[in-house]
Structures are given as C-alpha cells and as structure tokens.
Length: 252
Image (tube, rainbow, N blue to C red; front, side, top):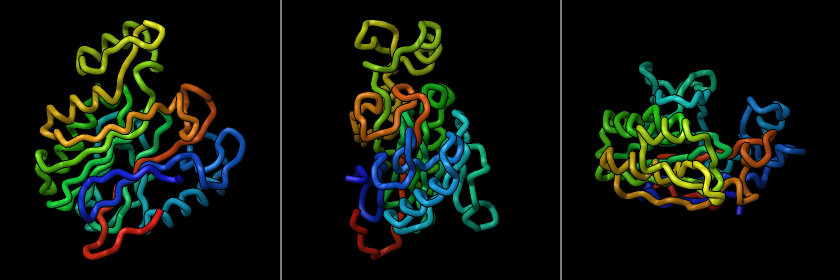
C-alpha cells in the first residue's frame, strides 16, 4: 500500500507515504520527496507530482532546520506561498485544498487536526525539534487560527524507535532535561531516546490528548527511508489536508 492513512476527523485527509510508488533509483528508490539529499532533481519533481496526485491538491513544503518555527498558510498577503525556501519545521492552515507536508527519515512526522474548527497542522519532530518545542509551538499556532487543543486529534507517524535510537549519555541528558518521557534504554541497554513517547507527552502538556501512535520503526521497517540505517537515502512525508466542504475522499 503506497500510503498509511490516519483518521483525524471528517473533512481531513492525513497520510504518511512509504518509499514505494515513485521513480527514483538506487539508495533513493523510489518515492523520494527531498531536494537536499543528492537525488536527481527531475526524479524528485516527478515524485512530488505523484504525491500531489494522490492527495488531490497542491502540497507545500518547508526548509526543515530542526527548530520550532511554524509557517502559516496562507501568509499575511492571503496567498498560499511557495515555502520551499522558508526555514520552518511545522506548517498550519485553515485553508482547504492545500496539503501540508513534512519530510522525514527517522524523525517524527506529526499530523494534527481540529476537524470542527477546520484547522490542520504538520510538524517535523526529531530530538532537536522536541527539545526546541516544535509541537507546543504548532498547537499554539493552530489555536491562533481557532483550534481548541481539546478538540485536536494527532497522529504520530513512523520514526526510529527507542530500541534503535542510541545516543550518547550527554545527548540523552540534554533531551531528558526538557522531555523526560523520551528517555529510554535501547535494545542493547545503552542510552536511548523514544521520540514518540516524548511527542505524546508534549502534546498532552499542550492539551492534545487524542493521539494515535503508528508504532512503526523506520530502522526496522524497510518500507520507510531511514538515515540511521542507510546513511545515503531519501525522505518520505507526512501530509495533512483540509478537504473542501462536501468533497468525497479520494481513493489511495
């Protein structure tokens, strides 16, 4: 199946791509969506067009920098901007018909929606993003558009799991000082981090308690790109979209 779908409420499309169904070759095979990892630009452009066809709407991306900045669509001009050059690690909107994408290859794709308020968001959350507060910042940005944290549903997508995410003791301590729930041992008994557990805790602290966790490890599951496993590799994406009112959901 090319995509994993999440239920974030009526009128919302939320999905995570796998690496299947694109045109890239070699270590990027096949649906690589990233322009910054060494893949051929023409292949990435085709893959993004394929994803847009699956979503049934334009898809916007940002230049992810492992921080906590949130981009808002539309911008202050009322237009849907081309965000590829904009540094941010999350995107929110109350505009229908625009797919919000975050790219990952071990970090968490976190998709959020308040279907009643018709506000959605997508966040890229690795260890640096978690400690920087990208998830609370995303919820706060959604609130400015009318979302209520208690009405937000979240989907925490595939990422490296705590069994596989080995880090140094200093890194573990730095993350644990901000997100203690992320601290865990690896399968080898060494210092590790559980990004999904940290994300769930941060969302709960922001008032978001309806959270679905994919529970899929990108290192262990070959359907996904994994930087920790492969080094040179592509990026898959989490995408969330507010469907136009009374629009039937597209088939995968």
